[in-house]
Image (cartoon, rainbow over the protein chains, first blue to last red):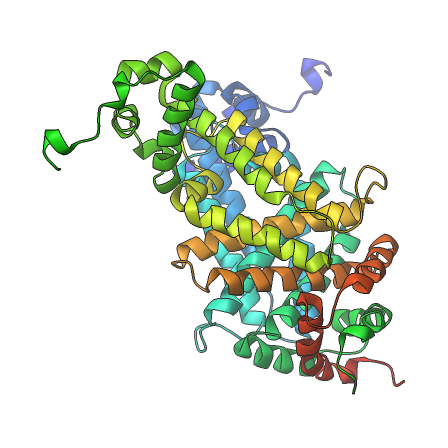
Length: 250
Length: 250
């Protein structure tokens, strides 16, 4: 600790509007909840981090830690949903790669809180927190479907929808394992691999689902040889060569 | 209800050993927890289903419903882990298909309880129930890795391990969506699609991971044209034709 004279002015005495104060408290809470499990963060710490008194935190969040946790989660969910927005222009795999890059940066930033939330078993987990997480997953699925050419004007069929939700679950699982493994491989490698997974999952689904087959044909026309789909296709040539004995003679 | 004369004898008065009684109570609990969320099952119902008194249930499970739930979960987890065991002979994709078939039968049988457990937000969820679920996931990953030629004698590298865990998460997510969508598509179609997903995920991973590439080469040698890998390869030919413009000229 530095001397009292060098300390910043106590922000409890700063005049903030109700909205500013709420934002400030949520910001302090989010920072704490990002790197510690919710059960390990006390209201005293949130008050200290915001430079205010504990009663002031209670005035804004009369439900105490649980209410503050849910408000912080709501705020993190809104931030994450913003990450998903990507203009629908350019090769679709590059758009998905940009969305994934922002998602992985979010996971990196909120590491411990992200793990604690998604692993379950926390006392802070309620039907309300589960609903917020589900809403984020739905928002992610809608955005990915948009880049696959499906949305309000053309609703996706059940298999394509299930495929996207399955891929999102795989991304979530990979993110949790990544956090467990000290963020290895580097985020860019993980991101490229997750895009590759989506590409091959689309191919696997196109093999038996007519709608996905027509989506894939449209998507491939938008891809380039030096983008994710082209690079993967080139790298798959030797892998596929090993499967020659499985194919009927041409 | 039939008349009392036609009712089966009250099993509370049957002489059962401690182990038999415990098994009987767990069986009744498992049946109830399979089709209802844990919060919705009362001890009275378990006692009624087993044909015994409520105090008798408490004698075996002094911790009440939570203890009974955890014991039922432990028992279901053991049953599920048995499903994963498959002799390491024959084409690997056919082995994985058999394991998946048993897994989906389990999901079908325990539908509501399976959903409630994995969706989170239940008051019955604790660090102990989370640990049991994680143990089942680990057991599943080990069994799948065995069929990929990795186990005690040759430990899998980090990417291959992450790939298998990611696929297991995708299977779990697909199972939950399947339950939500009134078990559509038919279990056999879902199973075939999940095997296809593993095959293409292996290919996507082999494209950038040397170990996976060598695993894939060994696995493909064990596959047949009329098995899952062969059927998928044949169906992928037209899909891949659409990507010809992404490949360098031969």
